[in-house]
Image (cartoon, rainbow, N blue to C red; front, side, top):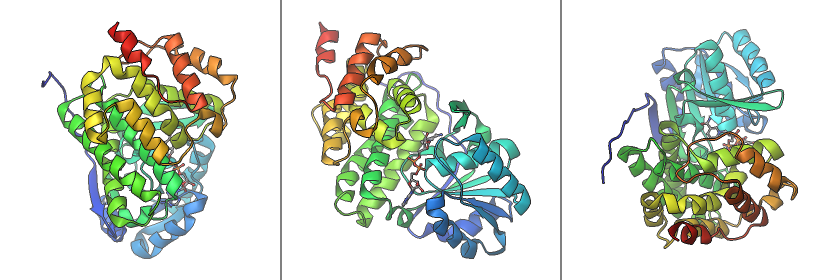
Length: 362
Ligand code: NAD
């Protein structure tokens, strides 16, 4: 049934394909800019150097210092590099960490951004920035950080290691899953969400065996774009809040944490979001959304337990306390006992609970 809804399109220009990085110079010119500061992580500095030739005189410098969680010290160092280079636009080439640095610079300077994503995290499609100051991560939502242009080049994702492809892809699926039961969901974003889950869940199992399979790489990046649109358009709920809490409290890796928690968060919310569950099962081709996601993660051969990625057993109770500290909207009320059970299962790598659905129905 079509409910009353609000839909607001975000003004981002997207180019998608293979070899599209060659269009970087034209896209910089289209932004009305002529001196780009290129951002990468230290690991992707060589990719950033490639842009020197592609941008020609519009390449004004490379800052290869992007790092996880967008610490303000790194942003300040990049800001001085930007000023030294006399840059009038930002080109971020990399995953969510590099995109985050570009957004932090845009927030401070108002300069336009071109993002060239190389993971499936989806930050390039959102007006959201998380920054870390003295160990505390704060998140803002503002059109001031929204990139003006994005070039998706499938060729740049071929080197993404299979395990990172898998976890980054499930991170993207999580955006679509929560968009399907978001309080402010709408039919357009739900279409993108369902297709995003379908496309990624069919491509990821191929990529872990054949990382250079271009058809699967193309599908995965296309799915990641759809899922990024979902994250940018509607509000997230339990799953994203929980991953934020767990990641921040125990310094857990971002994409892996999302991958482990997702089936459990879906099991928790299933009784309160039947239409979303129906869409997820259609997209996965599985009889149950939570179990289907767990089976997908199992097939991808990535960690399924928070204990495997560095969370201490003593953290279960603490995380449950923090997770219920600040109330937020979720389709199913968030109870401490329910969340504790969810975290304990995710900690141990167990199958998601099938009991919650029966409890709710009783
Ligand atoms: P990442 O950007 O931290 O990248 C992980 C590592 O993979 C880095 O060393 C990077 O250089 C390397 N890498 C990236 N692409 C590669 C490729 N194609 N080949 C080889 N190596 C490659 O990881 P991520 O998961 O993309 O981003 C995570 C960060 O993004 C988190 O801090 C998260 O909070 C943030 N994020 C923000 C939003 C948002 O809307 N603001 C959305 C999603 C994620």
